Length: 571
Ligand code: DGT
Ligand code: CA
Ligand code: CA
Image 1 (cartoon, helix red, strand yellow):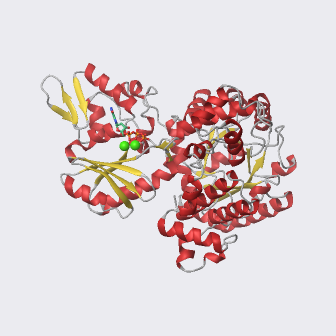
Image 2 (tube, rainbow, N blue to C red):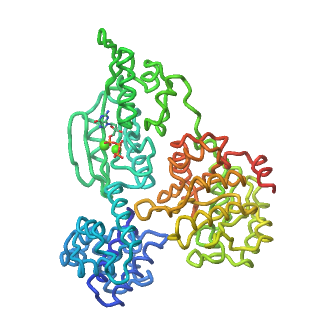
Image 3 (cartoon, rainbow, N blue to C red):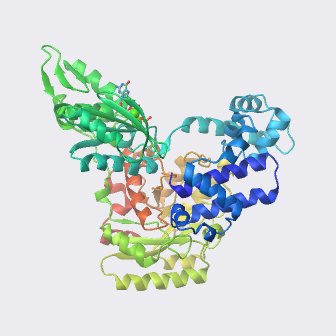
């Protein structure tokens, strides 16, 4: 977590506890406002603090300012700890359940003596919650769903959080002379959430490698220091395991520590059948113990008569069998991507100008970029009125002419209303190069109604892409319930692409839904949904997700070169 996010989350937690305590409404609101303003800052709050400019942040008065400073200095806040001590610790967990805010938690505590998650589950299962005034069967059901969700996410971080941190550590080792370095584990497989970061080094200087690792400037604590494995916790709370092996075993160790465990079990079973033994040191012939491979991963798979398998595909979903037949399908990679079809500019809730977004996309080597700002109903996203959209259209076309290096498309991320209608008149949508349709409201419709809503939207002749189709936010809210099968079929029938939204919190479609789309021949579009130039880099997470679903480049809309895309969109 960066400083802004950390400070905001501490203030947000203070607000929650004050609300639970039924403290003054104004106090609660003041903390929430400060948290919001701080997380919306474009610069780093620590810089403001160092330069004595904290008072420039809207909503940060004297009392809150002192608390912000304490968090920046010590990483903690005594006031928050005191508040936490006023309640059972379990109650704080109850508030982590999606849909349970401080008010609800407070009532459950007072009226049902719910003090932790176990109590909450019992109360829901015994149907005691629906007896409370204002609570129903549906709330009870949602609470149970929320508990399961919370349990499945506990202690894991988002891929987009772990990846830059893992890469930075890898770089730290490289810069100090260790050339054989790789990420391993779930991070190398690019799973949507990561338990801990694994790094592997091949070197004959294990001692120096360990010293170099623990000297990483962001190390907060050394959890374990051994001869082959060392674990640290970094200042941002991430656990990193590093292992060192001899260079001659690097490939075997990389194969072993990349996992998944299920994939490895399959590989080892196969090896045994063929008369080999595989471990983190190499592939050994069972008959005489002779080592036949180990230096590279390719050698390891090759020795077992298998094709090398991309890490993203090592989940035991049939890849081992295919590798044995030399038929591992080619899945999309970052270099297949020719452009980004869902991004925002400062016209709606983005931060950067169209010019800056275009320059950044060009620097990434893209052939094209679509600017798709929000539509008028999304007021929280500063959605564009029809007039503003027309202005934006002109502007994008002008920038396009000034920039021969990239093709700019003008589009919209248009709201889908509760009946599946769109937020702009058809005539306006027709004039756009691309229409990305999205649901941002009324998430809790009956599943049949939500299916109808989405089917109607993708059947609209002006729609090209269905944005983040399930609406899930990893760790916060499950997607809305609907019949994915029917929506995919409708998308296919209407030539609409399902999005893989590459935002780390979304990754929506997920890898499993990508596999489902692939099996059904539904096109997908992998988009960053960037709200600033840096977020264009999120593309890699979306691509990895599609790769985990074995999606071939031919099924990816934005793997089409410009001329082909243009033909497809009829522009
Ligand atoms: P995570 O950290 O929970 O996101 O998931 P992973 O896959 O990174 O798991 P982790 O960190 O416990 O271990 C890293 C890799 O090491 C794992 O993918 C496969 C390998 N590994 C760990 N423990 C075992 C084990 O007991 N048996 C086998 N075959 N492999 C293991
Ligand atoms: Ca791991
Ligand atoms: Ca680990």
